[in-house]
Amino acid sequence: MLLALVGCQADTSPTSEDSIPRARELVDLRSRIVEYTAGFRADDPYTPPGEAQRARLAKAVGSLLSGDAQEAERRLAPLGLGLTRLTDTDSGRRYDEIAATGTGASTGWGRLYLNADSAVRWNAQVPHPVSDRDTEALGIRLLEQSPGGALVLAGTHRRAGEDEGADVAHREDSAFHTIVVELQKRGVPGVQLHGFTDSSDRPYDAVVSTGAVETAPAEVAAMADRMDEDGLRVCRAWEARCPLEGTTNVQGRSAQREHAGFVHVELARHARADDGRDTEEAAEALAGLVTAWKSGEPDGR
Image (cartoon, rainbow, N blue to C red):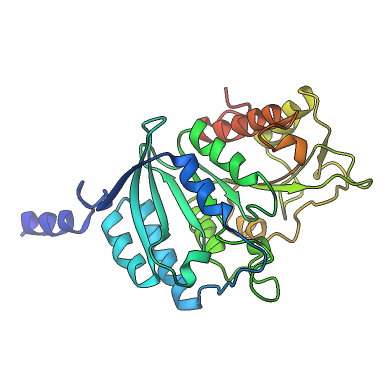
């Protein structure tokens, strides 16, 4: 009887076949994501997922994070979403992508990219692609250059739809928030990328905060210090009053509830654009942060 029970228990865990999505593609990862976001417009329609749909999505993401890709596929299909194993032609690295499979409302719900070659230790969040120009490119750069991560990408312009319903940084009824919370429940820290325009009340290149939390762990302080050392003017929200602190950000609030790391980073245009004079320095500091999360060392070294 003991052998029979052990056999039944083994049958309930994902097999190696279960852990691999059925759909597989060879792609240029950066082009795939940039082409997706390039079509976002402020006047696009947007319908958020309902409560039951968000619950189903949460279970699908949970299944994928637990290594059961085929169970994730089963849960995603009724939502108009699919799961694909991607191999990047440039790096050879593999990623699992959750994305819409048709033309329905789910096309505006965004995408998730998980590193498929290692456990997920951190995530980059891009809630305002296109409207916070080039934040999506920065998120892609982190995903490509820092193994062990995930990219959570909003699926429409922040002004799309009605009543600011697509501003996912301030709405809990979104696929974006649902995915981030599932990562937070598993203790995966996240950095959320934003952009701002220059103005007289923002004499900074970067504003760094921890959302609803008023203190900063060592790795976040180290990231801000590195930006400073590289010549960026940084406002640290745990030390001073800063503009754009992100204290009303709903992912920051949920991170506090789930006891997960969360960093809200606002960057000036010249610190996030591909051709910005300070972009390289900002990107290197962010890479140091996610490496620290992966390694457990404050400076990521």
